Length: 297
Image 1 (spheres, helix red, strand yellow):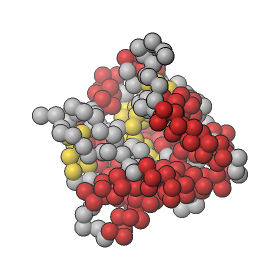
Image 2 (spheres, rainbow, N blue to C red):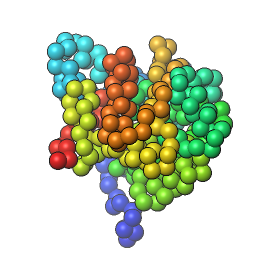
Image 3 (tube, rainbow, N blue to C red):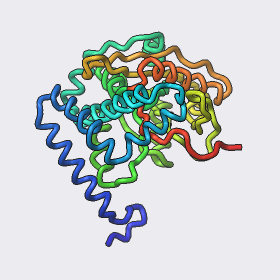
Image 4 (cartoon, one colour):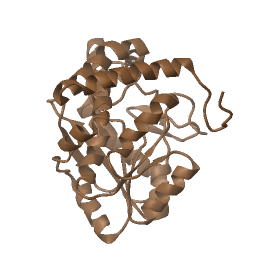
């Protein structure tokens, strides 16, 4: 048994889940890209989601925020969300094919011009999004255009799966940093050098203040806005919206959020995500426990 205090103890359930996941990923990767992505969506929608409780969680979240919508409509949104999650997983493991598709995307919106201007001036930029569509499509599209897009990630509880999942993020180009002291120091250095960083803000953070999201209070970290203020960086919401073919994306970068109170800034980012969720409800990851716990007093 390992005595390394930084290494989590062996867990048979995590080990077996990782074996099953690797088998599924390996099978999918043997298929042509179009079939592979579709198969990933089907498997999570029809098999993994119901068995793992993701479908039930998505339906619970939908009933919480949209109780007046018909049950059949909420069920269709949950199914679409599971399909999108499965497609996203396989896309992120299909580095070469996914990058080839993403490199052809021309980013849109006022934030793209602001991003280019910041790069030319050597100013840092924090690109902030949610678990919507496939955010990695935006990062891959920008890396293909010469941007040094770093990423910040939260280690998964399953260390066996986490070990290879982190490698998929590294493969898209640009440095990636784990949450924690060492990761924070790394991405701050990256930003101070005029780099760009992607942050995802739409997961529950214990102790964080509550901001309104889809009509319900959701604990939301203010760190992206605080970091933007500290480093005088642009804070730009961005979204990669999956198109009807299930394979291509539209990448939108909104105008930079005006600097001011961090909570006001993050509420503006939250509103930008809300707009996309209302327009494309099946593309947000309803499987997350977004509304849980009590907000900070």
